[in-house]
Image (tube, rainbow, N blue to C red; front, side, top):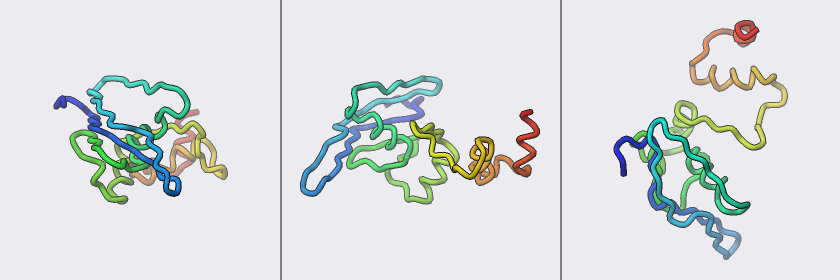
Length: 131
C-alpha cells in the first residue's frame, strides 16, 4: 500500500450474526485514500455503505481485516484510544444528526470542541464571534 495513504483498508470483512445466521456486510474490501484525495461511497440499499463508514469512523469493529489511519492500525485500539482518535482525527456527519435536543446548534458544535480543549472561551463567546 502507498506510504502517502492517510487511510488504508486491507481485506476488510464485517459479518453480523442474527441468532445462528451469519449475514456478510463486507467481504474483503481493500483500498487506500491519499492525502488530499476524495472518496465517494455509493451503492444500493444494503450494499454495506453504512457499515463501511461506521468501521472507518471507528464506531464499529471489523470481523476481520485492517484499517489504518495515518499509519496507525485502529482495529487494535481499545475504547479509550478510539474515543481519542474520533475526537481528534475523524469528522462524522450522520444521516440523522444525533444532536443533543436541549442544546442549540452552536452549543452542539461547541461541546466536543470544549471537551477536546480546542475552545477555551465560555459558550456564549463563540456565539458573539459569529454574529
